[in-house]
Length: 550
Image (tube, rainbow, N blue to C red; front, side, top):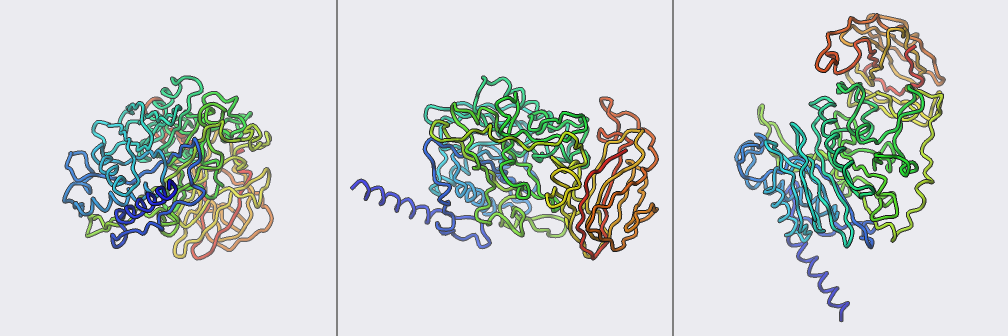
């Protein structure tokens, strides 16, 4: 009888869900319940808490508060009550499909918008009884939390000129796990602004009792490997210090000053004071992506966990549970997040009423350690780095290299290596224009006179160098002789070719700017910029390794 009653109750719940669940699809129609079923692998485990984070891309209500972006002011640019309803149901549909016990959110307008989302979820049969926001004066959006478990306490930690960090203590049975929801300053700003946010968070977690279980999550506007590329991207006004990697300590420095930095790994957590493990490290390197910028995969949505989430007290991270949620591919279009659609009418953008967000949700599970055989995480020996290797060997990161165009990809490759385990592969093609395929910025000293590297592969190739603000000097394949302009000729080599390229003359030092940093985003004016150029209409696939300034 009990079983029959339970089955009947489930059937009623499914029927209600089928009747009530709508989303903003191309036609704004109903979604069949079988389209949002959760895989069997996501079935709840005893004493488990699932946690997710989602940047919803601007969920606003239909009230005029004065802090809205123009396109979200009632009646402007197609932002009607019907359009607002579509956006609300779009976000609610994703949150319901994720099904996490606790979900951190950002780009929520305010408590009113969050309450509307809570109500929509309740009507869908996916209730979140508990909520919290971190109000920030003058901010258009806030950080927020929805929870299926009680929130015992909450606090907002103000960040100057940015959104507050939300802290909430989640009660799960007799235990508690703390979550910090972040939305750091965007990359319209230099790294110092993100360091400010990281330092607010650092001070708070350092003040927690020893062994506290907590999760740091959010849109940090910083890639998990920010230290490896932010110099080249032009954000470095902090003399090489990043918020995510250095303030929150997700990387470890090598034994030698020129050794590559590497990520903190599970095997060293027990002896690592104040460090954090970035859960992106649980996913294969070529699959890490929650956001795409100009064709380049980004990991600016992050979850960081302390050593306490790998011990035998309270909760621990369920190994291998971190993933990117795509809703069976529904949140993607052509391999990139299917963002909320806006269409140009003249010079203005109008809401189209389709899509979801320009970010993908991320999620993970945490389980009572006593209920699960976690294995000995000290068995994770960490990827060893040969002490003879140094920056430019690509042993631990891309060492400052980034894609120069959305048609080209840049990443570490284990197929070929001049030394160590990896080299850097640059590949792609532009049909109609000569383009920069990859670029980097290398720290230089006055005594260094040449750039040396090894290269192999094929393409119409030109390499160019310059000091910041100075003119480019070109080295064109196949002989890589010096030239004043680029020439693109067919080049191919199945063997490593060593190159030694003279550096351009030293530049005059600019006057010092704020806080004694020069006027070039904290870079030395004698640094060397390097670009690999690809001729139009020909596929480029080259590997480089052992990049040195000598």
